[in-house]
Each structure stands twice: as structure tokens, then as C-alpha cells.
Amino acid sequence: MPITSSNRRLSYRGRLAPSPTGYLHLGHARTFWTAQVRARQAGGQLILRNDDLDRARCRAEYVAAMSEDLRWFGLEWNEGPDRGGPFASYNQSERMDVYRAALEQLRIGGFLYPCLCSRKDIASAVAAPHADEDELIYPGTCRARREVDIPGKPFSWRFRVPGGKVIKFHDQNLGAQAFEAGRDFGDFIVWRPDDVPAYQLACVVDDARMKMSEVVRGADLLASTARQLLLYEALGFTPPEFYHCALMLDEAGRRLAKRHDSLSLRALRARGATPESLRSGW
Image (tube, rainbow, N blue to C red; front, side):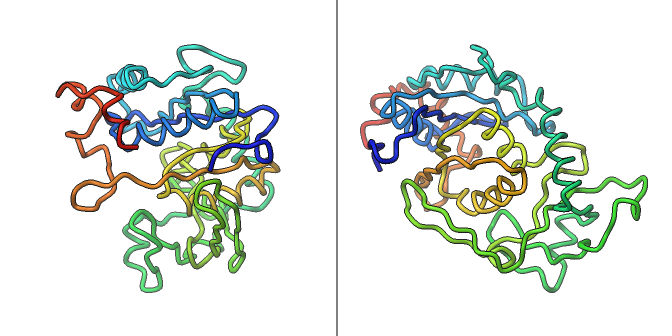
């Protein structure tokens, strides 16, 4: 969907938010290119954010490769770790204070409860259906727990979804969307037991604080958008618009992931590909 006068915001702000847990692949590049096209159509700004909260998998070499590969592909940004800007830091690992403030706001508001369950625990629960390949619907085992009940034990903070509530939004690419809390997704983690904010919370806080007007990302995150809209509401933030891109698939019909080393931008460049040739079929 092109940006027109009817849906253009006064100050368009879009973003690139790669996670340096591996080399960027062609699917990332197509989504990021779409984000740049839409920002330029709107005469707006594009922001680079380094989503480096995964302590176990984020590596300095991937951070360096991320910027190099994005530039090689022809992507440009107005604010970011290398350029600074009014909402610095643009490295998530340096923004823990704003995440903790949001966590405390949610905790005081009664939206959270502590959870001791592991993914294995949830998978073994008889009543735990599979929402999708990435997340199990939480069966509510710890819903009645209080923080005082588990002193000295590491735990997650889970967001208590309002069961039966239908979250609706209009996607700028895929049209009307609707997800039912408790059926399409369950109570979700906002803070992990290793004392790190989960993706849903960090993403919402940063997109709101950095004043994003539109978030462009892959269609595999449609259900995440429904979860995040609940967080926007609980935190009193105005949500951006969303544009979810169709996923790029490999020859077996699986979505591209960082395990597809042969389709990383680095590997493609090493084989003589040019950004123009890679974009020619889009």
C-alpha cells in the first residue's frame, strides 16, 4: 500500500531493528528495503536500532557486520548507534533503565504476575495447546502466584491477557487483522528470569519512546502485534501503524532464518551478487 495524503503522518518515522545474533539474510534485506522505501515516500526519517538484548547470542562481529551489510545493500538512516540522535542510546543493551521503568508501571498496575514455568513445563502441560511454532499458549499455571511466594528464586514476569478480548488492527499491507486473547495467544513473558526484558516489552517501549509512526516488519510477527497492542494500552502509549511484509521462503517453502548462511548478504556478496541484482525481482 503506497503512502498517500490520507494515511501520511505529519512526521513519518520508521525503523530498522536488526538483532546481531547472526548475519543478515536476504529476507531481512527485503523487509528493510521496504521500510526505507516507505520512509522516503513519506518524506520521513529512518532510524537504525541495534536490538542486542540477547546476551548469549549477540556478538560484536555481528554488530559490525550488520552496519556494513546494510550500507552495502544501499540502506541509509538518519539516527542510530553510529549517528546519534535525540533518542539515544540506540543500542537496546544501554536502555535498561527505560525498560525497568515500564516493568514497574505494569507491575504496579496489576498487569503482571511472576511465573516459574519453563518452556518444557508448558509443553508438558496437558492443557497447553500450540499457538504456533514459536510460542505455546500458557495454561495459567502461575496466574495466582505473588512475588512474595517465591523469594530467592529466578522467575519471569508474565502479562495477564484479558481472555476472550479480540484485538483488531488494520495492517497497511495485509488489511484487517483480529486475534483473540487466550485462544490465538496466551499470557506472555515481558521480563525473563535472567533479568532481561523480553522482545515484546522492549520493542513496545522503544518504538513508543523513539516516536515511531510506522513499524515495518515480517508477517510472522502479526500475532506479536496483537500482544504488543495490549502493552501499548496498559502503558498508555499511542501505537504506531503497522506494515507486515510477506516472508521470503527457501526452496523447501520454509521462511528464511539466520541458519540460511548461503543466503546471508555476506555470502551473496562474496559470490559476486550486487544489491541491484538482488532487488531486481522484487
